[in-house]
Amino acid sequence: MNPVYDCHIHMMPGRCDAPETFLAKITAAGMTGGSIFSLPPKNTLFYKTGTTMPEHRERIANVLDFCRKLPDTFHPFFWLNPTEPDALEQIRYAKEHGILGFKVLCSTYAPLEGLAAYRECARLGLPVHFHSGILYDGEVSGGFNRPLDFECLLEVSGLRFALAHISWPWTDECLALFGKFRSAAGMRSGPAPEMYIDTCPGAPEFARVDAFRKIGLLPYDAGSRLLFGIDSSVNDYSTDGARRIHEFDRNAFNKFHAMYSDPVRVHEEVPFTRHGLDALDFNSIFENAVSVNYLRFIGKKDGRKQ
Image (tube, rainbow, N blue to C red; front, side, top):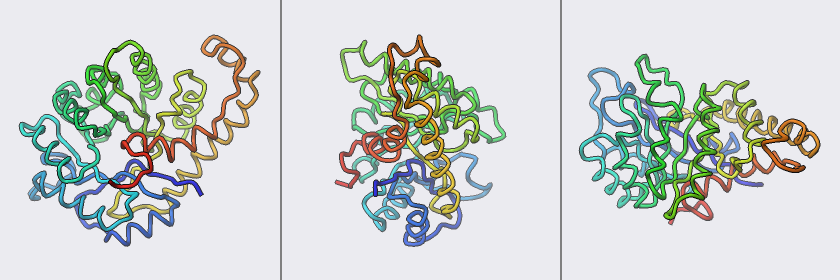
């Protein structure tokens, strides 16, 4: 059976399942492994008023300790605020202690304000997983999380980054931005930044299906950079919810595979976007999204800790 990686698993404040309980739940959901994001940074909407918010060293130690008690197909990410004065030191400390990537949510600042931090992540070869799309936080934050806000990452040579939730409700904008990054790769002398798209919910079902269809029809090879995620947490991982999302996505790609395995159908729908007659393999797009694309994103060939 092929592995299935959940690229989007949170560790949130409050009561948390023991690692063995979390493992039983996520295994029952059919998941093989994935990325676990540390507790959020200080001064976020995720901590109750009066709560002592842990420093970065404590949050790093917490997620590393949790992941050490799991199979080595689970990978610790550190939730970074790239605008904090010591962000570069936090990144280096995280790398030295075994963090394999970073989570960023631009709730009060623009992505542009974190370029120095993202350059350091790229220098160290570690990916950055961004929230993208509307954020139901009660604050004015949408202007920081539209896909085009991340166009500035074209200036970060060699960065691997993902935009979560297909940037809903700006899914078309997300796909257009992806096309721009793919095009830019052939225009630069140094290592080009690599954009990935995380399909985890946030985008409702009708928007997800619409985006899946467009991902296959567009000639950007987005299927090679698509990631599968649930957006649950280690606190109480939703086994039934993860099963439903996995089944829903697989069924959607199966449906499109049946529709677009006929090259004539493809040509009728996108005669100018795609040249010639091409049958589209939507099933391979899905299988890559749940497995090899994830491993490529985190910089591993076989998904095992080194």
